[in-house]
Image 1 (spheres, rainbow, N blue to C red):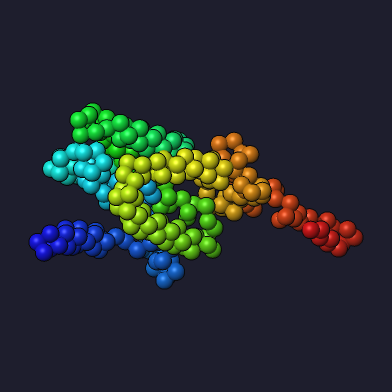
Image 2 (tube, rainbow, N blue to C red):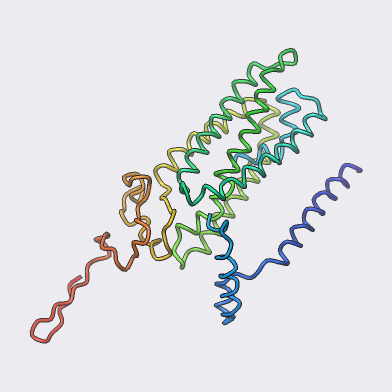
Length: 292
């Protein structure tokens, strides 16, 4: 009973801090404009532009079950496992601050690809080290613990920030809200699945669970490389052209660096999609002839 009260207390306190932060958040400029509150929209936009740093699923297994993993799979003491679980979250926090400086310098694809490779290697090393660890031989377990910390750091750099805003960057204005809602829904659906499956997996196959996540991360590498266009530096008007080249990958695979659109190449100025047609007006004898 005491344990349940402690758990509920921790969740409640965290929720209170979230509510307090939400109170001070301004409404979005889009919503304000839709309700004819133009001055407030200008103020919010100006505040965003004045901040220089603004232009800048497998981790849930680690986040939720880190102490259990440290204790059961890496054979560490309970107290040490709890301490390391908290320290891992601090590493996660440090990693999440790094992309503020890297996002607009190196692009979304570079961060996702490099970080996915790093995450896959971390899981591979954890699997290898835990396969040779034992109660009498804890050195490999300590090494696996270090790779768990490295995983948290790498995940915070790439996969923590990018998926939350990338769906809105590849969607047009008409579909952006729906795209963001679908992306968020799938995110929490997979969070639920990972949280439910992980204890069962560790209870039955132990450290071999990490093999599953290593394979998943390896599969993400070609997925990002082939299907994720680079959105660094493009404007709102460029978005309709992201997948204009057609084909299975929308031109991402055949474009250098996945950049299917040159920044500032507006849709109204580009003549790249034959399906969009060409409109030409010729004056012949005072008449206008239009060809499509």
